[in-house]
Image (cartoon, helix red, strand yellow):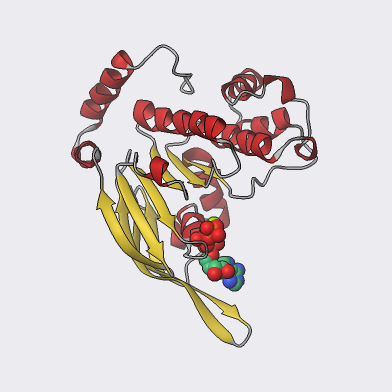
Length: 260
Ligand SMILES: Nc1ncnc2c1ncn2[C@@H]1O[C@H](COP(=O)(O)OP(=O)(O)OP(=O)(O)O)[C@@H](O)[C@H]1O
Ligand SMILES: [Mg+2]
């Protein structure tokens, strides 16, 4: 569960204070798929960054699974991020001096994950970049860099995936593929997915759509599958497991298994 209470973010701009987010309160239950939309400059990236603890609010509190991240030390925050959160930045944030393979490997090496190299190769394959592993970010197209960033975010099998326009730099075929990888992860492993997107067709597939305007939540609506999302939140872990196994059983064999 991600919980925001009266979150406000103000920055100093020249001599004035600029309010980027104003009194945002949200509860995102575990396993929910939320689409976050809104015009450019409405505060989407800022909100996502706050949820990941990459930035601190000016006032208000943010809690992840009961831990108030707004009161944590940098070290504790880094621990939570590494253990629970996968973040896909709007501007990739790949490490330029590392190859695609190494960029994907690094979060797993930091955590001391077993078979990290095999897993990095698997992830490269999942995003269709098997033959680009030895390339540096500067040698990759925007869409390819985005796919490396996505594979990196998946590396530690996060329970929370925060994705800032992950399909924005991709053509519709690759965009759909990446979208499917993310929603598979959400369905099969009950991953909480918060997806910032300008693509209304993709947003419509979420269980819930939150719209920001000028830093304020102007709409928060549950869609078709919302009932399932809500029920999942109140279910015990055993029940959630059953739901997921059910999903997998009827899921097609082509689904790339990011879980193993
Ligand atoms: N550090 C900062 N200092 C001053 N203004 C900022 C800062 N960070 C963000 N802003 C402003 O806050 C507003 C919200 O920015 P944000 O990046 O969250 O928007 P967004 O909804 O993600 O937009 P886009 O769709 O273009 O990515 C923008 O007007 C931006 O210029
Ligand atoms: Mg943005």
